[in-house]
Length: 123
Image (cartoon, rainbow, N blue to C red; front, top):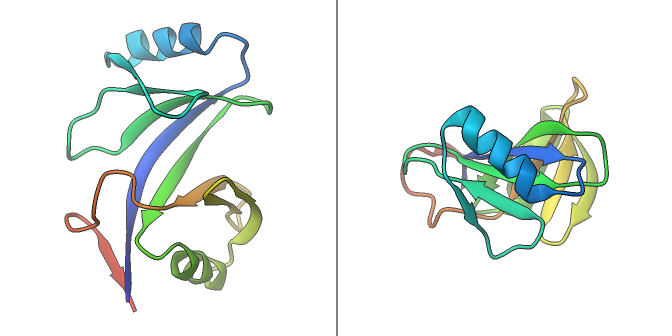
């Protein structure tokens, strides 16, 4: 058995100025900007019960994608493949996946601590 939940909405920005992009989204969403430990990302403040909001610098056209966090990365990827998703690429420490409807999303390790609250449990 493994657990998963919606972790993050990632605002992918094809930009040379990540700080300006984060300032725009901060003002648009009314959320303060903070730094992260990972270059290429800035975080927007969220409440504990909300998914994270990240602004990310990317080399592809701008879009929004979501991350699903799981305590069993491979188990969650296999579960999603059984539903029709495809593996696109393994990047650093997560899988980029594609839904049967064409949207890209990521399956990541836990981002906000142990998966104990508001989670789905899968056998």
